[in-house]
Image 1 (tube, rainbow over the protein chains, first blue to last red):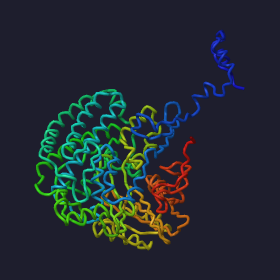
Image 2: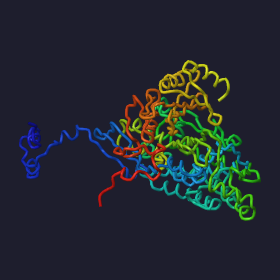
Image 3: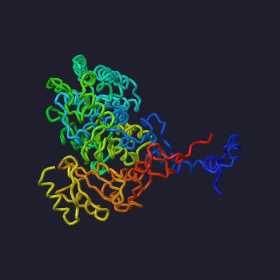
Image 4: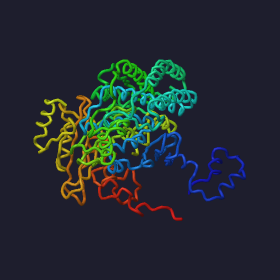
Length: 425
Length: 161
């Protein structure tokens, strides 16, 4: 028989009077005692509707006091079955669906998908088209990293930098509006090129943006770089050893923050990344702070890439001239018979790539984003597998959360920067 | 991947009867459930090959009488910066099963769970063989070719009116 609360209090202080509230408490049948409650492990359910999990990630956490002992992520709250959908539509029809994977940078997804299909079709995009794609993809990277920057600072309690990040991001969306026609779900790339050529007006806007942006980046850095609260919340949090990072198949900024300069833009150059000069920033600390500043450095590199692309971009067509594979121009469809026939065939029956398998991958802002496409020679892919970086990176969450404080879980998830649209497919 | 390296891999894997195929310039190895663990052990631990990362696992339903299911592991070498696919052909059509590679790469854990969820391929020796996307009480495997696009009515119980 365990002692009541009053008996315990009386051991310490024999003359303590018995208050009415203790009477009321003891009269209830309490199965959990005060001491036991602290000793027992507590199971906490975090999410799927939780502001700090950045989407619909659910975590089951086992707590000892404030320390996380075990954590199990639960996915699937945003599972829409895109891989199944892809099997039931033509190659072109799937492009708008790729916007909804990593919705923070839709352009990169469009490009990754079309690159994989173009590999399958053995189709070469004209040089200007490749430059336009590179510019769009790098704007997308800035767009995504700005969100990662803003939300991480907001998670630690700073609201101002988030609004600054959103202000800059808004400019990128306006630029997209100028030459793509859509702010957010862009669906910009087409098989064999892009939807439409970039305009001079948009190029001027991009030039203006990249001229001003490094100054704003400096401001964004200054406001938090030596902020005691911010640095203390992130430094050494979410550490993962280099061996673990490799073994868990992690890609992107988290891998580079562990000291490995793996970047598909350098290792397997696609688009025009072999023609521009840029660095791959790395860090060795492998904690949330290193990941945070690494993303920051990458934005500078993106600016550098965009500037070179605008200088080097040649004139010419943006779409490949391949009647059986790429869509013809709209004005020609209305005036020419041949183009009308090809357009009709492509829209209704799709491209018929040779039987085979193809893998196309790009370095998105979160890591390696790839599409493994199996073709059986018909207009529909036989199988489309989406290799999403968020899904692979999330797997390391239990390792990072182990023995961390519960309040740090927010920062650790922010450091991983997952997008659930992509992780859940 | 250059010729020398591919020939080296071919030489090291010659004992396991592995065949090679091509994925748009990236080589791939075709193997069976009996050999896959040994093949991957060689690919990972041999210091001259060293594929340190397994970045993805693709499951395929070919919908035919033999070798219906396939699992394609995507391996990446950080030392050599190249990629190799390892394709496992699973002969059993009724109860597809293949040994798990979780002992070699931790990352395989979720990839195999996804393949199990979507295709119903069981990975023997996997520490946590649960569904990952679909609800636990779901009985079908949605990415199999005989699962209709519109779903199966009643397969997910809805709340009563």
